[in-house]
Image (cartoon, rainbow, N blue to C red):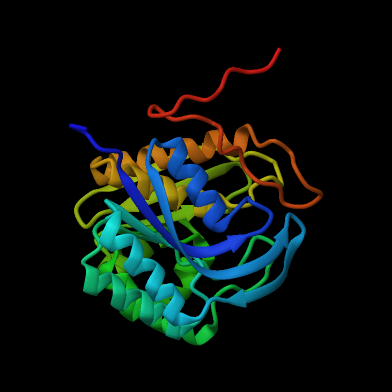
Length: 274
C-alpha cells in the first residue's frame, strides 16, 4: 500500500463497562480510521455507577506489551491513560524513551467520573517529572491541571496560566479542559508554546459523559498518528467529543458513555435508523 493504515498505541486501563479506558480509546481510534493497539495497565470492574475493583497488571507484562507492539506495529502516536502507581509511570516513561515512541499524548487520569481515585498520590510527582517532558500534548481537566501545577485552576485566566506552566514543565503543548468551568459553557484552552486557542460551546446538561477525557486524548492521538498538525488534531478531537456527548446513547443508570459512533471526516457516522 502506498499509504498504509496509521497505527496508534494506547497504554491504559480496561473499563469493563466499555465507556472509558482502553475500550474508549480503541473505539475512538477506529472512528478516526486508525488501527488501534494497546498495552493494558490495569483491569477494572466498573460500570456507569462506579469503579468496583481494580487489579494492576504486573510491570514486566506492561513493559512486554509495549515492546511487542513497538517492534512489529510501530505506532505513529501513543497515548497514556490510567497508570495508577509511581512505579508504573516510571516504567512506561522509560519504555517510551527507549523506543523513541513519537507523538505522545498524556491524559493524566487521576480520578474517575464517579470519584474513584485512579492515580496514587505519590505517582503525581512521577508523572510530572518523568512523563510530562515526553509529551507532545498533555490533556488535564481543571482538577488534574491544578494538581500538576499546584495551584487552583478555576477560571479562564487560571487555565491559560496552567497551560503555560505545563509547557514550562516540559510538555510541548497543553490542552486544559474546562468542561465544568461554568454552568452554561464548556471551554477548552490549548497552548503550544507560541499560540493560544480557545474553544467555547454551550455546556450540555447531561450525566452521560463517562469516558470524555479518554475519548478526547485518544482522538488527538489518532489525529497525530494521521500526521495532522497538532492544532488541527486537537480541533477535530474537541469537535468529536462535543458531538459524542450530544448524541450519547443514554446507556446505564449512572454516568453513561458518550457516542463513539458520532463519526469523523475519516469514518462517517452510520445513517440514522428509520
